[in-house]
Length: 244
Image 1 (tube, rainbow, N blue to C red):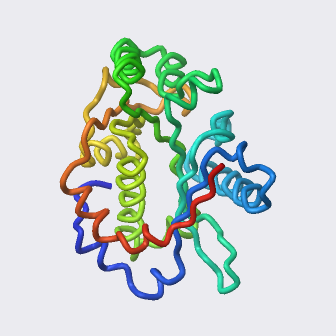
Image 2 (image 1 turned 180 degrees about the vertical axis):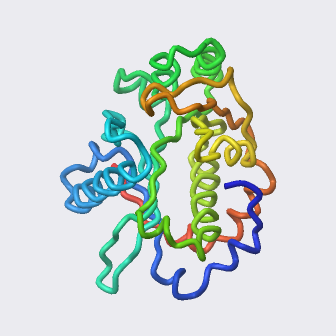
């Protein structure tokens, strides 16, 4: 997922662009009374179930408690009637919201259950609380099986994921964020391309049946990632946001 070219982002052909829409579902608990929230949430669960099932051991859980209060960022196919079907999704959970709900920050859970040194992460979390800068943990990347097989447009789909990640963090004031880079999927290289650096040593991700991983800290977005996001600004501008 590294070395993206903004020209590839511009290369999304017209029919693909017309059928796709970015959707953001913030804190589903806050808008659970809305039918659209419940519908999208169930579709996200179905996507994760099929997506995780095709890539991970059957014992890997595709969701956890943070799915109910985190922010779900999606690329959806939009039908002529306006129905949205997520084909790519991931989750961003802020330290601030975890503190609000008295839940453990997921990045810390990952390191602690994997028996990896979390001292640098704990220092970063305390700095965030004291200095007031936004901090999130992004995880649960998954893709529809048919979309994953669409090799001809894989670079275009990756550029959309980059666009969402870059622009969402910037506009939400999440100055710094974290993600677990999984060696098998080369997402550690992708997050490094986005401006990330490892925080601590490589570890075996307990929740993913000991997949080798590295906790990546992104303190600043790289120029290359910013250029990709700029190339898809029009798709971001017509995003759908559901928030309480």
